[in-house]
Image (tube, rainbow, N blue to C red; front, side, top):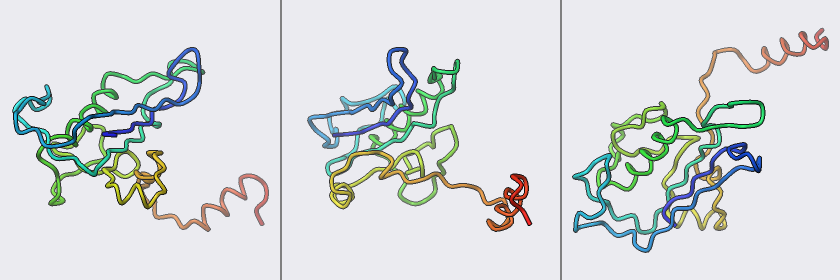
Length: 164
């Protein structure tokens, strides 16, 4: 398995269940012939991906078009596709110089908490071979607003009428 992408529910009119895309490949070896080029980087070669699988959790991407249906915009689809293509390319972001997390994919592949993670076979084995993307990508980082949790709870309880 090369990649597994979890997509949101409500994408299809006939069912509300979430969708999963599985990308299968016969060979994850580096392409030294130059045959596996993409429109994203037509001169780049694919790297050796043996022992790695890309997991993407795109369940939070997309927008509701009515109360029961969601759609992926062209930008959403491009963001997912660009992330996959960047992961396959020979250049990776191992020096920490790349930034991820925005809706524009970084120049080179980087793991983004809550969205994508390149997992090794050892990672997959440690998770008992469960192939759910959410297990590997983790949760997205949440910005701290500087208000203590206890203060928020007291305020919310007061709003609900349970305050002191």
